[in-house]
Length: 368
Ligand SMILES: *Cc1c(COP(=O)(O)O)cnc(C)c1O
Image 1 (cartoon, rainbow, N blue to C red):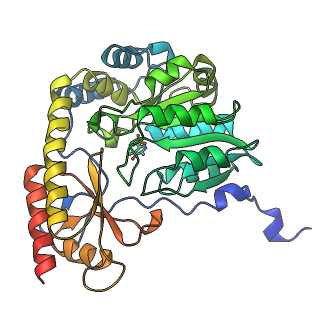
Image 2 (image 1 turned 90 degrees about the vertical axis):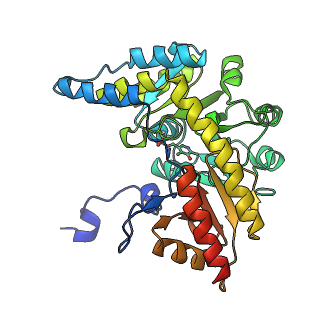
């Protein structure tokens, strides 16, 4: 008989290299009201039409959802001017990112991302046994030349969040195209446009046009941010027929729930709700950034619904001290150690009232 340790089931080595994802805090003890600015959620809630559709879906919970997500794909196509046949829906865009790794990468392969890119890229790569490769950035922005230089035979996927979370920085369309042209033909470029709706820089493109022009680019989108449906887990990918086909093979046949399908189809068509969330964010993002700068905390220019701001490493003005101070006031923001940015904090943009509480608390922090 072999010994117990080797005869018991063992996970593959890749998954065991994953440090489990730690999300933003949702609660804190001893305060009456929590202001949650830690997970880039929509502070204005969700579209009333989407909430109504979600409730109505409660009447048919015994039935399996439409595994092809036909109505939702058509609604997305209509709202975004895209071809529904090139759309694949998932349980959050996180699922699409994982499925891309499952379909396109494995042991011996490399999955590239920029140094302060979204953490899920590394985790999804490890999950399939591939090696994540982190490319240093310039000024907290993806370094296109360095990414092109590092890509080779083993590079199966390059993930680029645009705008990026947690830095908020954006790569102009011309640079995204230069990246694609510089990558090997066998490499799939995945443009994660989770914050596309918040961008106001005219040089930006979500990547949809590039997807339609080529066979080697995928764009991913989410209902968790501007649509305010993070709890439902809904996202989608837009890609060439070959990628859509591969994703449809590896996904679960009913990977998106019926309430999510119903709510998503209403939300994507609710222009008024989306515009209010976008403009509210634009005004408040500028206000929060200006207040932080005025207090002496540099802010990385952001195109998302959050700002990355620099505190100190230690001492009274450190990121840790600020976080502790804010928590006592019930204000939750995101520490950045896991992104290799221990002096920084990421602050989601809340409602005008929430941001007022944040700014007032930080003013007290600076004066203390
Ligand atoms: C929030 C976020 C997502 C979306 O995740 P979901 O799984 O759709 O909730 C994807 N990419 C980035 C960069 C994000 O910040």
